[in-house]
Length: 316
Picture 1: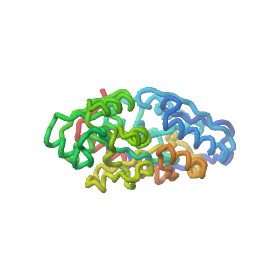
Picture 2: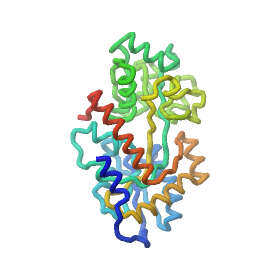
Picture 3: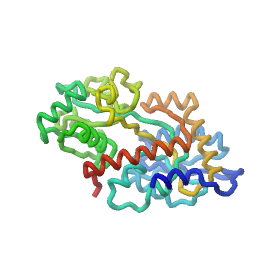
């Protein structure tokens, strides 16, 4: 699966020196207004200048983004339909979804790795837990008695906690929610005892002393929470996870087209005004090309395969 992904990125196709000759559609597999949608609109506007054609944002939500991703996977491989992708559509579904209508790593190829987003282990500000070790010790001392929230079965927030459970050999009960807002409300109220979520989504609650961050999952500390240690600094390096987002295309797009799109989107996300806006939203603009993006995806596939199979995570 991963070998096919890497090879397909660099398959030579027909020459496409005149690409693009008409507008490009960028599928955002979620509703308008969310973080992925904002990322798409910011980078598409700038990339369109480089390409000389407009980029139309098409929001196609549903099934955790799989409906939009499937439409791109089945599209003509000519570079005119792209996907604003994340792990939720590409590297997690092969291991947790019993029925898929397409094979994400085979049917989609990387174009440009745009941003990484830190996730953070969070507890109520009323909790006595102040470190990851406190959380683990509490869980070990009360096996099966603690609850943790997620934004749904098979989501990043779910699998991150399963990764910590696997690393720490703890038993805590999963309580899936329909989104971050109700989960965070119950976390504040003490109905659940912990959760992994994005730093951006909880920064105001942390600032307002409603929630307490224990550690971020990225290799470096988050600019939004510079005083919060990383999971590795906290003694749990195997729970170091980068939550990525980037541009992908249908498999079979000629290399000449991939390279044009890659250059346009990398330059877009690294443009100072775009970088600054994304940083304020809690994202880390990385601006890497197709080859490096393929390596990130391959590593991610292996990680979520290990966690999902070990913990028996399945989306029914």
